[in-house]
Image (cartoon, rainbow, N blue to C red; front, side, top):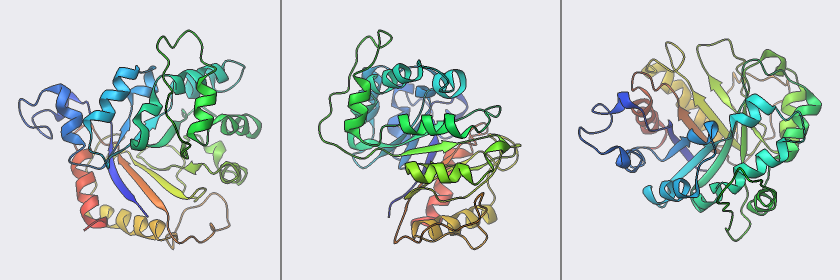
Length: 289
């Protein structure tokens, strides 16, 4: 199995001179951060379509064995919500923007839904069906892009598998039908810890685990104490070795199928007080000696 522990985003003014060395040029922050952790979520893709130049620059700035997670567009998850025919071209535009230029450094896609998005089985099944499960499917989807993508790029070769993870924030998802849908489509449910009124669940619905740790004291803030990191390390160990924690919090009553191993991706999102990169390193020391 592969266990990767990193951060959500890297470009924060408050990190400069604290996590980042004084006088480090902003253009070199990704280069520096990618030598401190082994995976980073790209957040900019959530807010707008990125250019092929950005995707290629990010690819080139990080080590060969580095992996990005990519956050899907909020235009799809927060605005369109997959309600009409605009969803297909919007998804096509995302994949035509150049994300496949990350090549072997492309990890899971994160699809984060807002707190007021309620579970609708038919709509959610339609969304999951749209997700390309391979780079070949992504290229075919990208070919349906519209004029919003001025310089389309989806020219990779081969056919690698693409992984997807879903983060939800409404209690209506706490029904056994939801993890069943995720398992059917081999999509991971995000283990999302936050000091917020969001549902928390650890159902294993794919062959990998995706974790987001949003802060110990408040949303996006607060360092995780040693005892908490010890607990997360134990959970990661269980998931990575094909098991689950003895006290796993599940929506569905049935345990997952036992596996020989699972990959685990964990991202710290407690960035407000510069806790994320340091907590990531502290957890990594517990998991990967």
